[in-house]
Length: 117
Image (tube, rainbow, N blue to C red; front, side):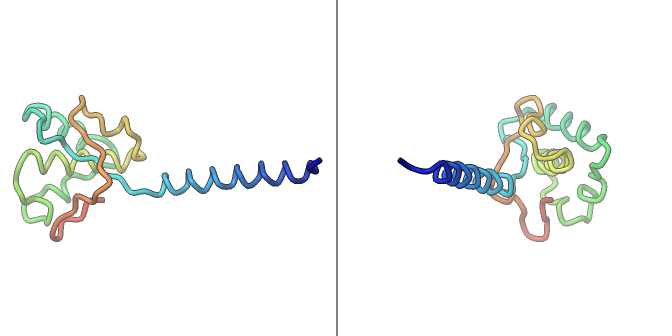
């Protein structure tokens, strides 16, 4: 017959493994970008909404001359604004919904000197 200590040890090891697995998932960096299929009116609404929220500073990222201003497209600017909002609100799945026009990605969308937060 196995001792109660053995079962407690197994339980502890199982809980520790689950906690380590959850921590690895939480540490994975994610970004929110606009779907290429999104309507222009939706993308514009996303920019307006995201940039009007507290803690989201679109002006320093989307201003002409800034590294992320180019390409000067609605899709690119919406992705930047949506990601700023997503990052500032805790990277929750629902913070990238944007009327089903947002997409959470695990590949860093940064390019050149434009660094996504």
